[in-house]
Length: 205
Image (tube, rainbow, N blue to C red; front, side, top):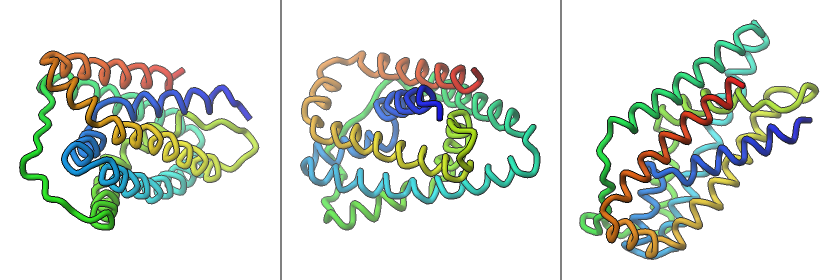
């Protein structure tokens, strides 16, 4: 078992979780508007949805590898290319991050959990991202690829849950910083670009 690969996966996952995106911005907005518990309820839903995407990738990619092991390199190339594409999309996106308390209806914890699951499960981009991200971090020659994908999925969920929950708890402080510093959107934008490009290179290596 290559523990260095697992460590690299955890570091990469942490960097991705910290990078501002639709999910953690939504968590941030819920926490700012209604309180930390509402943000964490949303986090639980979003993270739970990852189980479906992990399962799809685990059995789908494993079947491909059984059919032709040479396709593994092609999958890794696809993964690196997709991450570079995401970096380009971030580069061409606006620099500003809008956090508004208006038009955010208050929902129960259960409703927010359900909404988080639906947001994650029905987003095909998440499955594509898992397909691009996970194959580059297979870490053991003896374990089945399905088992390895599930381990990676659980690590992804645990790491993301801890960081997203931290964002929910610190929402007030983070939102104040975003509103106070007008250029923070530029900084966060380039953080995302660097993270995506770095992980793309890491997958190929």
